[in-house]
Image (cartoon, rainbow, N blue to C red; front, side):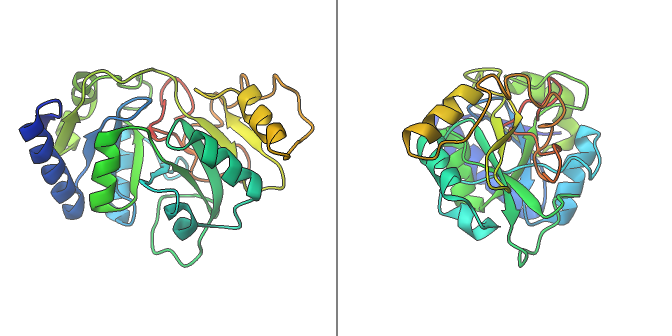
Length: 257
């Protein structure tokens, strides 16, 4: 049975953050709010916890979760070979609903699933979750729903689907929107939109053009991209990344991220 904390109350907020941080250190799962939908998360470096997260959602290792961070600098600790144009997008859209899929650092001691040597990373725009990540370090986070069900936009829906699987629920009321993050594959020499989300393909390319990083593209490309391509943008070799609550790519998994 999970313990629920109302983060709109100052005392409950601190108690909830402390309880959630402790639960994560124990290897338990927690439900957190984001700027897209609610997510279910755990320590990204605890392989057993990541396995339980995937099992709680009813999915396999072929759908690895994205990783949420609280600072831009953490991207360089988790990834390598990040293109200059990716940093431009991050400067504009982080914190926010942008998930970038990059080549992971080979030295990392983690197991997010079948990532194909990549990792999906996002910095959410939500004070509660950012503060939690500051206390715990990077979190593997998938949308707080079971596979096949709509993503949770409030804590009650998350509890109905995952309550028995999670230790702590941080309730911050309804999330600002239902759209997932936009997932961009940054492992090549040009951006590839794996899932269209809260940030449009047009916005992505216009930012790049305005900063001198122009790419030939169809402005409508990506508008319908990734109904399952962005499902869980953790391993982008071909379009099969992680979700977001993270960072999920279809109606069943709208990330956090």
